[in-house]
Image 1 (cartoon, rainbow, N blue to C red):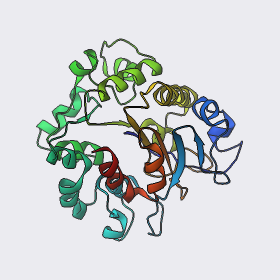
Image 2: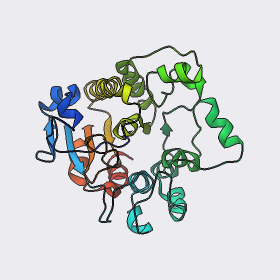
Image 3: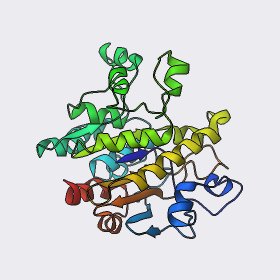
Image 4: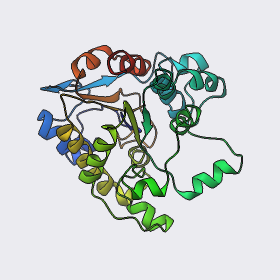
Length: 296
């Protein structure tokens, strides 16, 4: 599973929807067109792109805390809380997150689950200081007893940085990691996934550029995501592996606003069981149960 933060399916708008404004090779080469609210379902062979309801019947703009909890745990978190909430998990959802998250479910089945992200030294200093405010994805990993990867795992090819290429770690954090292009990062992730029953990788810069942060890097980041996804979808062993690319709410697809959107979240399935999975998902709370049905 590749979790892309803040990517929805928006209007066919060449001014504010970057997929139409700049183009996106991963969609163009595989499906021959961009997804839109006017045409939200695309397919080619065993690759399916489709919308996923992120509002879950609750008024207001979807947020990361409840959206990701719904996604990774398989229950309607905003309905349970009574509102959309983020970016961190809502307090009353934490016991359910500890019990129901997908990494915990795989562990209970004695299956090997793996979180492919690595964290810099500052993250370990933070959690070792006794502070425990974590985002949903990191908390999902922690409560499942999954080891957090660090510099060493990236160096050895067993994990990826959250920005995939290592460039930001080197420039902003002073590391000396080899630069890898998005295609290499995708191939590394495929190799990592081949050793596990379930592998999760989180990419969050899509949400950052959707909020119009890192504006000077927009086209560079957008291009890296494009190349990464294209390589994943085309070089995955479709006979043996299942790829699920999913988001938690809309944002990036509408640059007319700096906030999240009411648009459906982007979902893509490829490879084994991709058709069955695509037909079984309506909203974020469906994702984990469907994965457990077909892939556990």
